[in-house]
Image 1 (cartoon, rainbow, N blue to C red):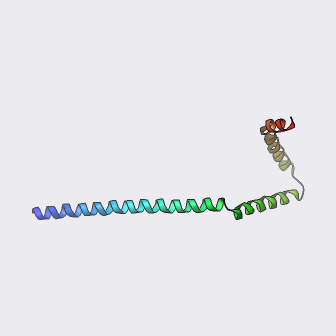
Image 2: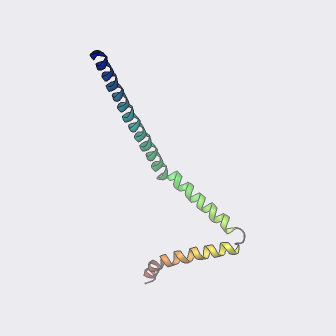
Image 3: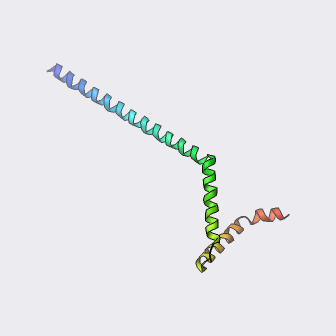
Length: 98
């Protein structure tokens, strides 16, 4: 009887160890994968190719925007946007004028 009890306790301890080891392995694997992707994303964002891509996209957008006529809604939107930008940077532009 005592041997059975010891065997059951021993089996439970083994299962607990296996579960703990499994949890730690999962944790470290997830942590490693997350760090790997984070480093990849940062390297892409800091690359010259990405900078060129963003510049080309902005140029393309500006070119597309310059073609055709603006609707009244677009005129109102861009007027408000430029007004807010002008107000935000007014101290800077005033200091440059001095």
